[in-house]
Amino acid sequence: MALKFVSYMSSQSRVMSKKSIEEFLFQVREKNKLLTITGVLLLIQGKFVQYIEGPEEEITDVYESISNDHRHTDMILLDSGDLEERQFKDWSMAYKEVSDKQVKGIIGDEELNLEDIFLNSKDHDYHPVLKVLYDFVKTLSS
Image (cartoon, rainbow, N blue to C red; front, top):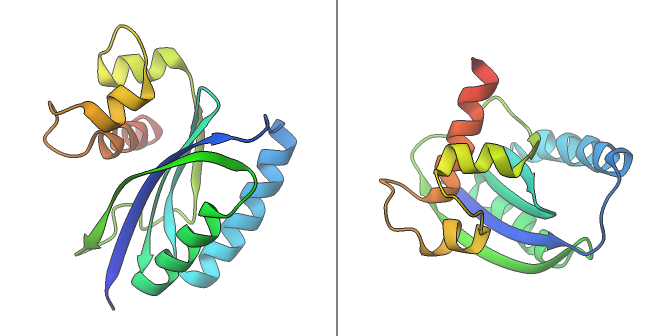
């Protein structure tokens, strides 16, 4: 089975309450289990940063659905491609609201500007989105 990943950033069309986010995550996790999609969703400064992975056809369909979801605006595709193996195989959808201080600690920037970090940075061995996500995963397991 061919695996694919997609990562994107979008703004919230309106600020979601914690309860709304919890309800949304419950639905997404159940759907992702059925589709065998795994990944991580971060909320940073009112922006969603998400990485999803799974079977190619399902990832394409889910990304298209997200692109048309009224909860997202200013959606930017950050990265996509083929995978040899899953990076987040145990998570139907991990979620974390990340503070500015946490991202600054991970990335090392004095002033947090998500567009600069994710779209213009050339100083990382792999995509900056994945660096944030992997560093987030390390904090969960330590």
